[in-house]
Length: 79
Image (tube, rainbow, N blue to C red):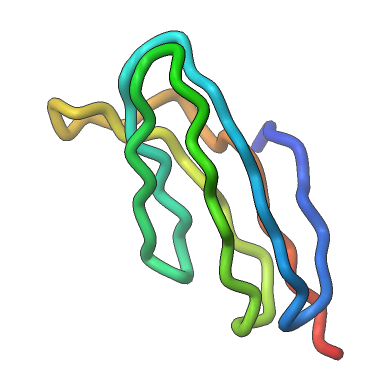
């Protein structure tokens, strides 16, 4: 499994500013969103929180391949 868990309540405002040492795409399953990160450049990400559940976020490489496992889990609890 692996990966940390980000836990929020439904409709919360959620912002992340990830930085990567290489170009990659983070795919948030469940919401089916992708965020492209460039090497060394912080990216402001405002995550939605309207759907409840536990959603894995995985790394996808620009060549279409997947990274190794889950980067983090995103848990959204009902109001």
